[in-house]
Image 1 (spheres, helix red, strand yellow):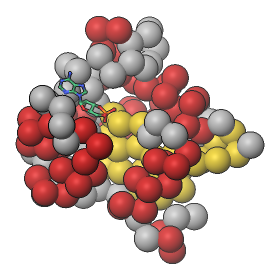
Image 2 (tube, protein in one colour):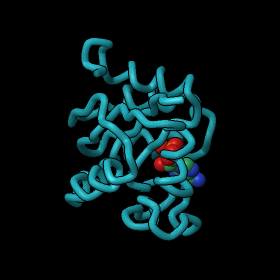
Image 3 (cartoon, rainbow, N blue to C red):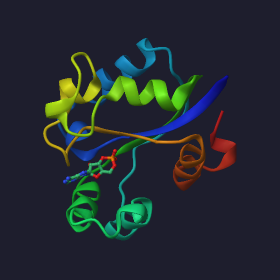
Image 4 (cartoon, rainbow, N blue to C red):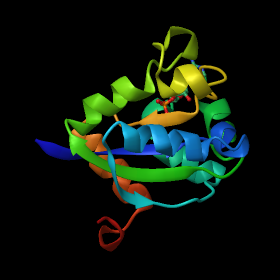
Length: 138
Ligand code: CMP
């Protein structure tokens, strides 16, 4: 079925001017952009977004990094969106990302890995509403 996922282009990729190339790869893979903006997370809001990782050793650094510069959050739509998008972005660790994936091309490290992708339909909806009101999702 056609459904939605949530993504954000992370500070490293935005700062390096890779957002256009990344959005091109996303659209060429058949995803339709439902919502998009450029914004800046505070450390507190980054912590809220990644609250599920609060007990991980990398949580503090992750919140610093995700609030270090502007990000580009998006809601995307496609058949089988969540799983197909995770395939398109590749493994969290770029050293393990497959050829042709977004992280293989643009990620710098396991932390500065260029892009986020939701891991379930439920989280896609929660994460989408974290950034976009219902009237901004079309
Ligand atoms: P993301 O898919 O957005 O979900 C959680 C993020 O935490 C992940 O991408 C990375 O940016 C970061 N992350 C995951 N594992 C590690 C790790 N071992 N060390 C540092 N950062 C990590």
